[in-house]
Length: 137
Image 1 (cartoon, rainbow, N blue to C red):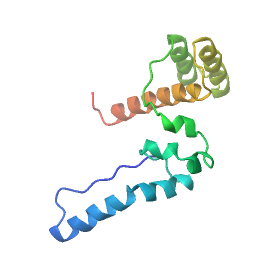
Image 2 (cartoon, helix red, strand yellow):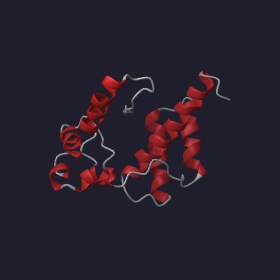
Image 3 (cartoon, rainbow, N blue to C red):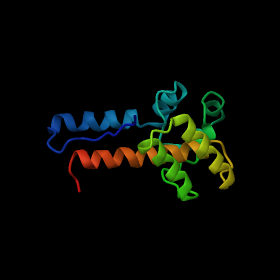
Image 4 (cartoon, rainbow, N blue to C red):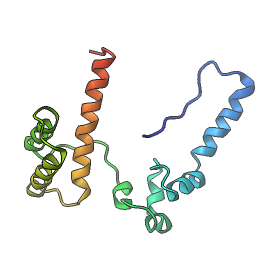
C-alpha cells in the first residue's frame, strides 16, 4: 500500500515532458481530492484533510490531518506485548487488548494511538525481514 512515482534516468527526450505532465496531473490537488473522496488513497497533501467536504465523507480524517510516521513508544511493555504475538504464539486479539490496556495507562488519549503503535511495530517487523531477506546487514 502506498505509492512512489518517479521518472527513470534514461528516458528519451520525447517522453520526458509527457512523463512530467503525468506526474503533475496525478499529484495535483484536484486529482488527489477526487481519489481521497473515493477512498482510493491517503494523500500526502495534508491540507486536503482540512476540507470539510472530505472530512465529512471519509474515516479517520483527524488522524490524516496530522500524521506522524514514527512515534516514541510509551513504554517497553507495549513492545514486549508485540513480541509475544510474534514469538510466543499469543493471538493478535490478546496482544491488541493488552496493548490497548497499556496504552490507556500510558497516556494515549486518542483511539488511533493504539493503531499508530501497532502499525509502527508492524513496520519495524516488515523492515527487519526485508533487510534480512536481501542481506542488507
